Image 1: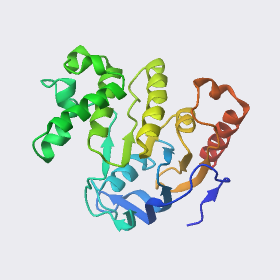
Image 2: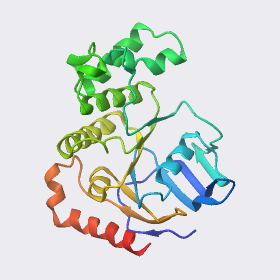
Image 3: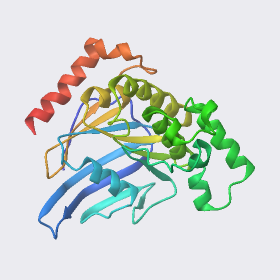
Length: 262
């Protein structure tokens, strides 16, 4: 598949996630979610997936995670075909899905507990991650004592606790109010830059997609394909005010026009 591209200055280096002619059908083949989807994602880059509802954004994320398998084509991570869940990939969803009877610290430690008995070093790392997401003072609070935005911060710390170098986020802030969402987007950019993770982020919001990303994959209506890859050549760190700049609005228009044409 030939993908239309804008000049790329942000993403360069080793390819860590790739898809070749990936297809996925459901309902005994009657629903084609993805068709002939080909892409490459470079180490340390931040990629946003944007497109109409039902275009296969979340399906593509689950395929990369290994939670489901392609009907056709192949997805590879670090040059190895994805055949199931991997320790170097971690995923975060729209809902925080915290265990109500566990404190913030205990929720962050959950991936470590699943893998074995947490060590003192694991607990110290979890505490450091809570500080990283701005919740150092809420390590022993329960979810009911936290706002929705704070719960998502705990979920983000839990994501990082896995140690995965590829982070998949499926509209993690979609249910939050706009002010909280903007603050968390700024925090997410800072945290991802600090840990150096490769990040793939699903959103319906064009401005959010561009604000966060090095590249925006614009997807077609179902059956989903990557119609265009828009490179976001904007300085980092990015203040919220960058969204009023002519360069930012030009990128918004590029994505909007592509979505209107697919």
